[in-house]
Image (cartoon, rainbow, N blue to C red; front, side):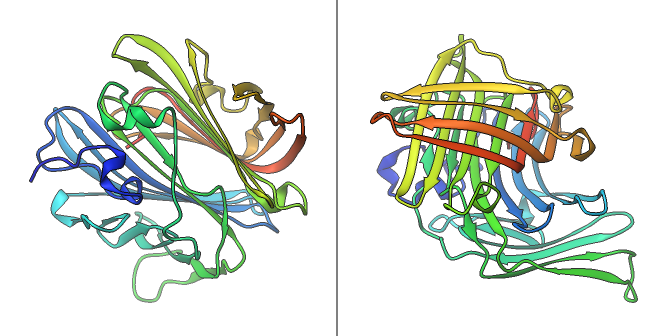
Length: 338
């Protein structure tokens, strides 16, 4: 079996399908991610299913982090799997690892930790909608740019779903169950050849902005073009009642925060097709969770971050975005972009 080649010629749904193939020989990273947030309370679930190919071999990992800003607690569960436990459908989107599956608009899973187990089932009716690309479309037909990023529509409501925390192992374990109907989810798919570079993903759910239905996604990735020139790539998605506004931009050089700087203010500016996106991100230090990746890379998740931003379109129309319920992911070199 040969690796799946990147490129629009594979059809409109190719971005949601697994890109990794057993014939891959060079370093390769791939990750499917889902963020689910409670619009009424400071609670969020962060799920990743990943595949990493390196000189040490192939690693498949499922992880879930549930943050409860009401109690100040968080639960992290992670498991590694051999590739024979991976479920890859060549015609449908998503990835399955062990007892977990993450597809277009739906996910379910169970991950055991040493002291507890975390399970979930979430469904949102937007499967099949097109993904947006980071950078120029032409970059996805080859390997000159290391990583490719695909984001779905910025947010979709959960029509049915729940999260369960089993507090102790064994058949008589007590559990906490949360109904997730009305939560908002966002999905992304990151894949590409080479090792992961620094990146920042900012997600602002619509209900935390105002009643107008605005939501924002911003993905920034530091990579090398042609393997030589350090470049920062930006993808911005603003969902409005009139539709989705998107900005894609390049910038040679550029500085992104590191996981140890996740609590510091970070400012961004994007200029694209006559439009200007600018703003500031400030995390709540009490809700920053710092983690380690599979190959020594670190990353941090900041729940309940504050975002102040403005988007001025080419026709000089400005939209202001102010939220204190954003989720920010900050990854350093070697972080699990897979």
